[in-house]
Structures are given as C-alpha cells and as structure tokens.
Image (cartoon, one colour):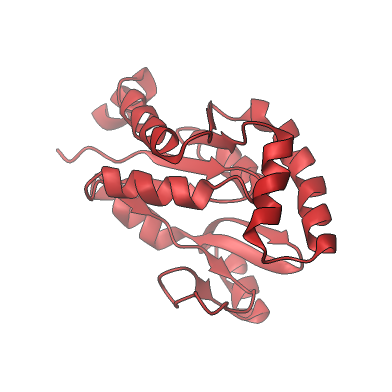
Length: 198
C-alpha cells in the first residue's frame, strides 16, 4: 500500500529567507517533496510565471474558489487574497509525496485547525535586527513598506509557539537540511504510523 505523504506548513516573516530555504530543501529531497503553488489576486511581478510561482486569479475567481471549498486555506494580506488550491495538494499526498505549503501565519492556523496531522514549521531569523537588515538588503520596497513588514513580523514572531518546529535560518544549507530532518522525524511518529494503517 502506498504510504501517504506528510503535509508540512512553512511560515515565517517576510525577509527571513523561507522561500530560499524551501527551494533548497526541495532540491535536497531529490523529487520527494512537492512544493504547493499558491493562488493569489496580486499582480504578477517580472519574475513571476503562471502556474510556477503562483496561479493568478481575479478577486471574483478567488471568492468563487472559497465558496466551492477549492482552497485548503486562504488569507487576505496587504489587500490581496492568497490561498492553497486543494486538489494538487491532495493528489501529491496520495502519491506518497511530502507537500510543503509556504504560507502566512493566518493560513497556517487554518491548516492547524482543519488538518491536525499537518506539521507546522516556523522559519525564524537569528534576531529581529538581522531580519530588518535582510529586508532592507532586498532593496525592493519603500521605507513605509519595510516598516509595515517589520510591524507584521512582530505579530508573526509572537505566534511561533503555535508551531511544532522552529528552524532558525542562520545558514541556508543547514536550515534546508533541518526541514528534511523534520519530515523524516514525522514519519517516525505514532500519528503517521496509524494514519497509514487505516
């Protein structure tokens, strides 16, 4: 019988480097991790590619997905909707792949409530000062946007205790390997064993 994969939620404040860490973890997994692609109503950026970085939707399309229970979780963030389409995640899990949802704290709390078997992992900065330095170093946002993101980060960091694991992104390679370790550890827990016995 095909073992189901693990659903892992990865959250962390903007600028912490979670996207880079998750991407590297996927490379290290050699095809055993499926990175869920979110849907959003925000405008595409030059680096974006439909179906690769995001599924781009209008606000009406997104509201229809919510109404039809086609998203596992969703949140409104800085005036736009973000959410996880349900079907690709369920398909990947049933094929035995581990699935990572890189989502905001608000969405993570929905997953925690609706999917108790999910593994919640928080990517934390070495310090608040380092987070500010990384945000400023990106050079992509105005001072007002940076200050807004830092304020949001305080609330996100306050919810770290709601997560199963906390990985400090001090060094990308180590943080990426820590994600692999957490996924391996989950497969040794009783909930994973009994889930696959059913």
